[in-house]
Picture 1 (tube, rainbow, N blue to C red):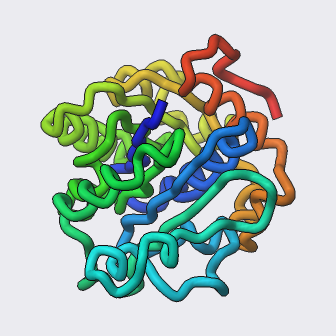
Picture 2 (picture 1 turned 180 degrees about the vertical axis):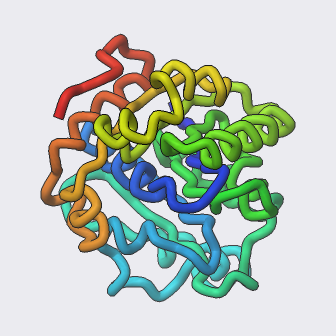
Picture 3 (picture 1 turned 30 degrees about the vertical axis):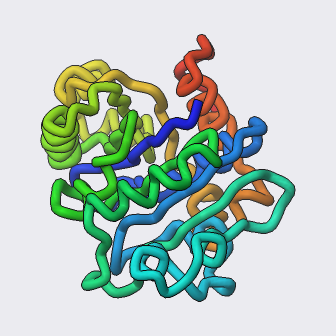
Length: 246
């Protein structure tokens, strides 16, 4: 198995980090050993959502610079699941280069079933660092033209990096709002415009937002956990329903 998956978005505010955290928890709950690497330097958020902020001393830049061992910078959230996390630097100037992040991933890849990399939004150097070692990619969008355009740009950059296994997540979907805005006639139009195959439709859910910001996602799964669980199954190639009602 040993898959490296980059979670990306063309613009900020899509809920990309929440999707990364939710998917990592779902995979861990399915008896996989999972490592989440936050590569969004200066804007890190995975540590908050996985509830490890108070424990943080070291981040990925400390490992790269030799300021700590790998074991010291890999944190395990509370719980019985095999879920681990490496934080991004708090200072954007400490962003890790693509070659060094790839080298780190190659060192630890054999120890995990899945490595999820939370990429910075957009297609800058941080995105390249996050994506260069990936086997697969998940692009997170909302039902907005600016978000879909960003997804197109991300897809093109991923293809430039020879990553062809790309899947789409439509996040924070609100059916009533989607109908009222009347920008797209249906979800198929969004999928066609992005040019990416859909793997999950995640509804707007205030509970999952609240849990993620409190660092309690792993302990108190909302109804959207069903969606993340199904998404994890689809990543493994299982034929489960695409849309789960919540």
